[in-house]
Amino acid sequence: MADKQLIVAVEGTAAVGPYWQTIVSDYLEKIIRSFCANDGKKPPTVNYELSLVMFTTHGSYCDSLVQRTGWTKDVDIFLQWLLAMPFSGGGFNDAAIAEGLAEALMSGRSRPRLDLLHLFGSGL
Image (cartoon, rainbow, N blue to C red; front, side, top):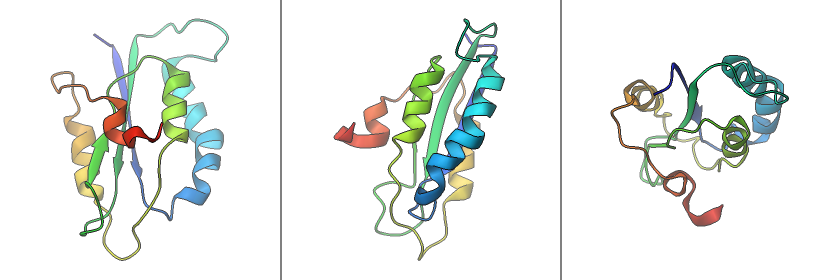
């Protein structure tokens, strides 16, 4: 059981796509490594888990409004998940922000863990 859990909730629409690499490298990686007390050179000193929630927009063109990964303790794997996110759609309907945040809030230890393929399909 982890002492700390970090869930990153991300809008998965095409509007975010062009900026995502910079967001991850300039901001999220630093925040995540600080949260985990992991500079990549020595073993972490904190027991933590990381998870990702991606939400899209309301409308008939979405397979699902909200998708989430399971938990991982590996920072590098988590960063790979972030960089592999598929961004598409959006622009015509409201983003499902409330649903995405609700999923992040409900993603406690009692929820079943989902396989990464559930989030990204077989494209990885």
